Image (cartoon, rainbow, N blue to C red):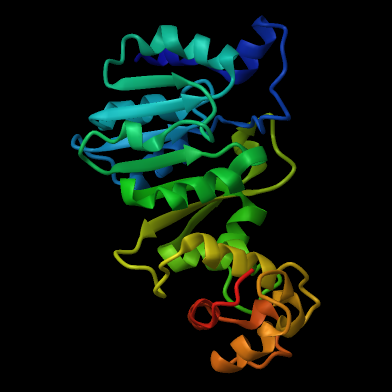
Length: 284
């Protein structure tokens, strides 16, 4: 792909020619800084053996860089306008598969061809959290995830206990992944420029969760209940996940004071809470 052809994919030029605007509902902010793109690809350590999943390729700025190094790139684009635009140019990239559809509805398992995929994406702001949870649930398919996210979401994922950003998403992700913050990205690196900074994270799936979890749905239910009201003591907030009167007994068995709040618990303490809740048989 020549530099001249790449210039055809400048987001501003494309939307001007189409007399259209980026979709706010789809969270469209297109990365335009080549240095950021190069650093993302470098951090992902893409080799000629790698297969890559990109969610929200937009106009292909990151896609083309991935395709130059990877054996296979699967790009999933929800916006039919952009998917149609990409399809023609990507025809000359035989190692790129373009899927026009919603990543939340795509069966990731169908993309697996025997080698774990690397996920490298500038996730659409509007759906970054649900996509992240879907990736987490299908983590066995992936070797590593390099994700660019809105700074607030990135801070929630990487936050340690006790911080105001620490929540159910923090615990859930940290239960199954090593999380590393790689670098921040300023709004000026995008078009249109978002109102907030972004951050690139590396998520490495653990061979085993940090705490034993036999029923992930129950674990998530307990986390959601625990953080359902940050001002509530655990003895009160867990009432939506456990049978009446069970919260105090479960907390005592886990060695956790009922007056503590969810944001003070470590992943290991949530593991103990989950274990005792399951053992009690009093989950709603």
